[in-house]
Length: 374
Ligand code: F6P
Image (cartoon, rainbow, N blue to C red; front, side, top):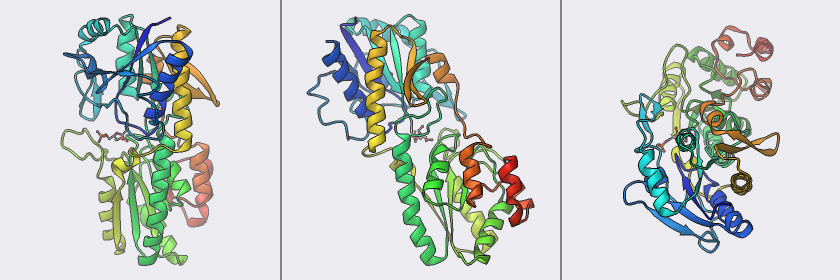
């Protein structure tokens, strides 16, 4: 049994992180009599002069509904950097971190993060340090777990935004574009688009063409609906083109909503507006589901550690908490299946993904796309 464990959060924050931290502390102290040290500012907190805080059941009291992470986080630093839109891992200062963990009396680590953070955790595991991962990300793009906490809250926020855009779009007969996050996957766009009754959903997994977008807008006009709501995932790509980044170093995705908006206005002559939802999707209080999932994963991570399941990540599969090797968790990303049931349902109820095939077919031939995929 470990006497003292460390807890850290890495990568972008996600609603539910504090719920998970609280569950880890309560389980570790209450059930197993351990001590808990919070490492501040992600892995950077165990470098140099180190930044840590003692965590007790009292100090985590009241944090369950709070957004962000009480420990602070980073999505780049000494352990991981972004080059050309990809995370790269330079020579990590693991030796220094391990020496500091020894000085601090931290015998094992529970690391809460997405693919990048779990990749760093795996390096600690390879050096023989006991470590367990807990998955979080609003993007829901980790293959080793069906859901990550943060995702459901992000969908709620994006859905509410769509509901609000709906009424103003209808009042002004406009095309409204909502750009949402999700990195190179379209999970947030797809789920929020379905829940918020979008007419078009553009996701990275199904490259779009403007001919199909035009066709959908015009079809709506003909049927008497003089407004159109579009959800665009930040990583959505036009056929034959690359994703659009906010900065020249290709670090942060963003801008595709504005691009689509300008082109639609040019093509249709209709007034078109774009809203970028951005970090509103990550900030603020987690919804009930994410509080529950964060709590469950956090508590199970402690139990897994005690059971000797080191080098693993806790995840959700078929409604049960399971453990999977970190190597699997950080290398396999989960994309929206283009012929999956949710995409089919969206098409069945008349939502367009603006695939080139949709432009070629008559309106009453959509069935062909629904049954043959993108
Ligand atoms: O991975 C979570 C996420 O919010 C992505 O959806 C988004 O692309 C990225 O992080 C934004 O990162 P930053 O907080 O550095 O702008």
